[in-house]
Picture (cartoon, rainbow, N blue to C red):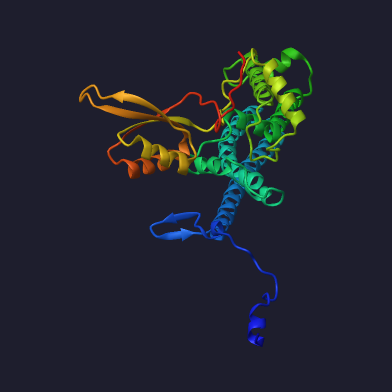
Length: 363
């Protein structure tokens, strides 16, 4: 045997990488372009950076609104206490302005949560999965992210956003203004703690002091109620909150939900479940359509016999439960298998079973 033969049988120097056919298959194709696994990861990195930038922009807008409220509060209180003749009505006016800023900040907070919830989803279900076995993302993370991109929706209700901003910042601003208003009535023009005099001083123009005091009490009671009534709402996934819980935490959560099933449930709490749909496919090529759905979408299909009452012709009716992000794929698969098929997609109130929410027994 020659030296060349011996050399050709030697293993190549250095580490080798064993590739499988699946690694060479494209993840995404569009008009002849193919996106490989590495390019898909690069695209996800750019999306992650873009969503972080969006969240940071809206986070800074939140700080801007809070700064407005603090500056207005400081300016109004300084004006009210600058001289004995300063009007206490300026403090009440500042409360109205602070309330306006609160509503603006709550709206901005909802937008901030929209972007940051996407960041949190990619952190927990895509990037964290790269660090621990079995090194693959969560089963539904891509569908959740795709639905949020196709149909953006606020992850927190407006009332929850107001409550959060109240507890974080504005409750203390209101408290400071309330104390300053009471001190203003007590000290100017002369110091007094007499209740009739305080009531008289609380009047603004032709409005009696009693009405002003009642209005202030009702206002502060409403503020405190909103701040603490929304304390149990935890839909803000963009916050630093755990996405996954231990088995003990899950058991405690189920126990709490069971005990509170018959109690008051907040009507303003949003529903975070993905939209579930039911597709009816009337076709003469039931087997071809069903095979494509089973192999490409991994969704179950049920076939029923039907009859067109106008033509009297027998047709097959396929029933398939799916989510909102799968509608486009279902349409394309149906068109490829049977261009003459009749497709109906309708909302479903509940889809329970494998591939959807688990079917649980109970009341």
